[in-house]
Structure formats: structure tokens, C-alpha cells
Image (cartoon, rainbow, N blue to C red; front, side, top):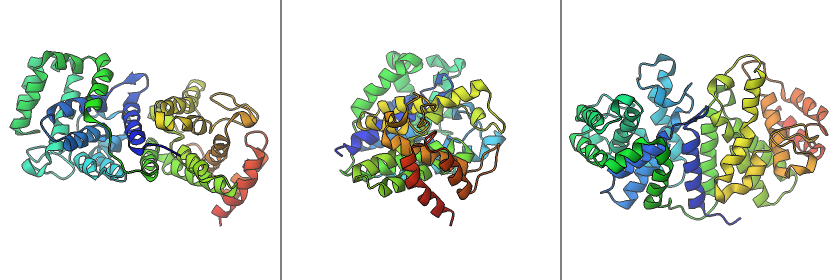
Length: 405
């Protein structure tokens, strides 16, 4: 398996930062715009610091995926239903990102990106020079992005006034001055303001920043995918740990089937990100305690196809797409998204179908209690040759039964 880990992780972060900013049919580009503004503010710093600030900007709100709506809707800490997640999301995000190799510097910047210069921020109430410059820059860029979403601040004069008001409160006077200076450039301000210009501006900035430097070896990719699995499962409280369990079950079955090392690794990785398409499914649908309407169910049914499209955007890992997206294909061809029958679906996908179903059956849901491991195994056995590949079921059942001991 010859994969450039730096390129793969770079692509994964780029795609992830885009997809978590999609809500329904709206593409907010929050992380991308924060990264563009922050990079402009960091222009005089060293290349390594610029790179850390850029990637911290892309990942700064990953700890907020569990909110009922996108974080841009919650401008105040006082929003009671979401207060705990709001106040803890820098900590959660920093903990997640620190797992990715060589990302400790990025994680530290994320931890402090809601600290205010005057000490009234969170999570630790840091002040002044106790806040890293990179975190202050992200705070400034984050605040500017949110303000620009309000029509009142969509002129240079109005945003300038807001930045001046934030000096020595939210950000330092020096940083406020720098922010005004970069936005004074009419071409840059217009591009930042124009939603359609953001992708081009983002990729232009990304090219200048350069790719993440990562040591050779596939462990870095695996650890990054573990983090993404955590972020996916934060979307809905009832799916906590789901992606990691599916990956673990799939790897155990692949080992029992005596597949080679690369195949086993590939199947594990696909298991970790098989539900990445669910990141664009609205929380109100995922959280619904009763049966879904036909329209709601169709919305959920789109998530494997979204997973396919997302992974096709990651050139280093695009071969994962048919594996990860095939976990709802059925052996008799009645599944989705493509209605693939029997061996038309790749082996890894057929393994994931069994593992995904077993974990769903044995996990609690708002509308039903979990099955015991034994009852789930009986259900899977009864569906062999219909929903599941009989050969894979034969390898899976002994492993699943042992989990209940």
C-alpha cells in the first residue's frame, strides 16, 4: 500500500472541514473562511506557524459537531440547551486533534481559540500574552467571519467599527489594527464577502501554506481516521462509538477470513468512516424518537452515497469509496444506495454490512431497546442469503457470540 500520509491527511482535513459546514442545502464555508482570514493575518509569521494556524482554523470547531445546529447559530454562551457543548468544544476539539501525529501545536491553538484578550473568554479565562498569538489570530478570524454573516457588517466601514470596539477586549489592539489593514484591501474584502469566491480563495491560500509534513507510515492515516470516526459519532448521542466498533468487528472478520494485511487495513479504515455522509443529515432527523416519515428516511438513505462522493474527493483514499459506502447494500440487491447484488458489492462492503447491522441491533435507539448479542446473531443468521452474504455470516457469528460472554 503506497500512500503519501501527508497528502492523505491534508485531503481528509480539507474535506472534513467542508462537510461539517454543510447544513441541509446550505454550505457555510465557516472553517474555510476563517482559515483564509487567519492566514492573511499570520502572513508575517514563519511558515511552520502559518501552517499550524491554517490547520487549526480548519479544525477549530470539530468539538461542536454535537450541537443541535451549526455553531454559527449560537453566538452567545447563554444558549442553555447547548451551553455545555459550546463551552467545552475547544477542549473536545483539542483532545481529538492531538491524537493526529504532529498536530500537538495545532491542538494547542484550538484549545485557546475562544479565549479573549481581557480574560472574559473560555474555557480557561486566559488573558493578554498568556494566549498564544495563533489562537488570538483564529479568534479574530472567527469573530470576523461571524460578523460578516450579518448584513449590518457587510461594508468595510461597519466591520472596521466592530473590530475597533473589540480591541483590548476580544483581541489585542495590534491584532485589531492588522485585521483592519487586511480588510481594507478592497479585492480581498470583496472575495471574503462573496460566498461563491470562497473555494477559489481557500485553495489559493492552501497552496501557499503547503502540505502537512508527516513521517512515512500508514499509522498516521489510521489515527486520523480514528479521530474522524469520533467526530462522526458525536453527531448523534445514540451512535457514540459506533464507527469504531464497526471497524473493530470488520477487522476481526477480515482476520478470520485470512485476508492479507493491506485488505484488513483497508476494511478497518472503511469501517471508521463509513458514516461520514451522516454529517450532513440534520440532527432533528437523527434525534427523532419515533418512526421517520418517508421523506425523512429518504434523506437518511442518501448518506452512503454522500460517503461515496466525499471519499472520491480524497484522491489518496478514493478506493475506499465503494467499501465504505456499501454498508447498506443487501445480498439480494434490495439495499441502497446503488442496489448492488451479491458479489457486485465489494467484499469489504459486504463485511461492513454485517458489522453495521449487528452494532445497530445491539445498540440503544430513541425508538427501541437493544437486542442481546445472542438475539442479534439469530436475526443475522435468519437474514443470511437475503440481507447478508452467507459466507461472511459464517465467519461473523462465532465472533459476535463471543462478545456476549
